[in-house]
Image (cartoon, rainbow, N blue to C red; front, side, top):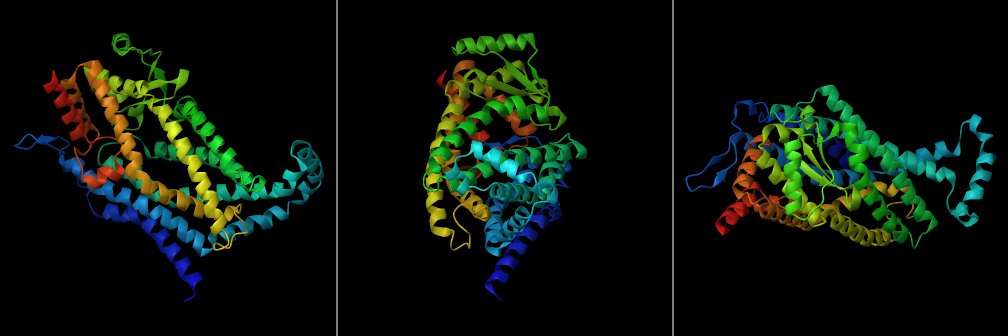
Length: 448
């Protein structure tokens, strides 16, 4: 069998694995039996906190699904690249771009004169308008194909499994609507971003990582600012916290921490999930704390205060700012690494040059592999920041007992494992385990 056919068959095998893996998880019967399991945590005779049987069952499915996503996605990208699928798609799009519909031909001279006034002649020589159309079309088709390929997997994990374990309140049409919104957002963002990226590769073949790194930082900061204002309202109803007593407690808490809080927001998470959560987002004058409404209806004011104190800890330690700076620095270094990699690999991939969009799956595979290898470091930094926020919450709230009650209750409601193996925490955990957080609070009690 020819090498090309072997690579094509490997790609098809990976596609089949992705499509059929939800069926394999369903056939285990774990999800179907979850309704008979208890969600209550327990204590061993030595006092060790134990995960609930229901949380353990969910974990037995969730962990292999995480591992599958980590390993199979880059394998999909590599096999698609080596199978020649990316080259075939780019050539097909180039054929379309070279033969515009007859009704559009008469408009081309006008368009070229307009572009000539805006773009320098040297740049126009390197960057034809049809090249941008090919890149845009490739990105949109590629994103759409990926979304459709992973639709069965995402439907099983995000809807079927969540309903089997009682973690979802969403209807099938509601889930489908959210999936469609996510797809549209991805297309709207990825299309211009990748088109601009490949335009920079053509316009500045040697120096493109410099402007690309600057744009990466600016885009990341803009996204952090826009996410709570533009994207979250597409999925949830957002309102200011209107509980006067709780607002007073929050202001008093902020006063003890020497912080200024303008507003705390609530989203109607109960329309989609039974889980309770809160998060901190934004920076500068656009910082905000967002609470799930499930947290307000199922938890005591003291427990909500501890949650808010934790979120204020992220604010106090400027974790969003530090995250943006770290991502910007790592991204800039990574872009120079990509330049070197493209320079030395484009011929082996049969590309027309480093700026050939047919190499996009290869680039994404490299990014996915590097990200996977760096997860222990990235998530280690995340866990460090979460521990800082936990300590801040304990110091500001002075409620270590409530802190323990809160996380024991979250373990029940969210079906969170109390603890996990060392390797799993090293690779996948962005937060300390519940057992580790409770031990920290117990140590805080002893210090009083």
